[in-house]
Structure formats: structure tokens, C-alpha cells
Length: 142
Image 1 (tube, rainbow, N blue to C red):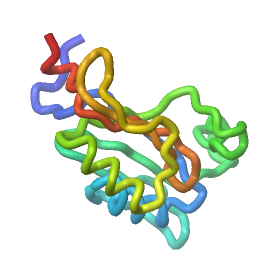
Image 2: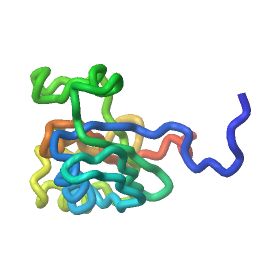
Image 3: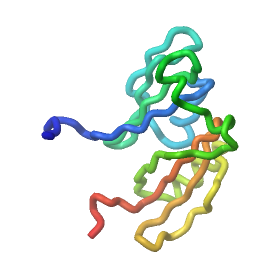
């Protein structure tokens, strides 16, 4: 299948948060995301797009009512286990680690050089979602 020539990223992680407004604020402060679009009605975020470099995540308010919401469990509901997590390429993993930790990110794996290249760490956001940040760029790896 051909891809749209003007598409920046063809895979975009999507997450759900119980307090999506607070999550958006925190993700921007702690991880350096920027608001691209937020579609909300009062306390409910129907859809939000946050960018980081040429990447993006989408998120919305957690619910158990919609067809999509019925398919998703929150980390706190399943013992902080995850079946997937976003991996974000950063230019300076140490500076990103310090910023995230200062904002209250719970570090799961301390920052370290990786055997496959680069340097990175893993942490959880305030609602327990697992994230990986590192300097390894698979698009540039040999």
C-alpha cells in the first residue's frame, strides 16, 4: 500500500487518561510535548494531539462507555502493567531525564547506555502509563 507522500508519521500512539486536561499539561511540562489540537467539552477531552519533533501522540479522556473506551484498561486497573508503550527519540537523554524527574515522573529504569546504541530511560506518567525516552534513533542506525 502506498503511503501519503506528505505524512510525517504513519504510526501515532494513542492513550487515554482519567484527567486528560491535567495529563496534557503534565506531558507538555515534563516531557516537552506541544499542544497541536485539543477538542474538549468541559472536563472531557474528546481528542487531543500533542507533538514532539516530527512525532505525535493522540489522547483523550478515559471512559468505559464508548466502543473504543470499552477496549482500553488504565494502568492502575491492571497492576501498572502495559501491553505497549510509546518510545520517544530525544537528542539529550540526560537533560530529558532530569526534566521529567523534576516534574515528578516515576523512573522505572534508570538512565543508562544501551547495548544497541544510544542512552535512555523508562518512566511512568502520573496516571501510570509507561514511557521510554532515549537517544537511539533506529532511522539513523546502521
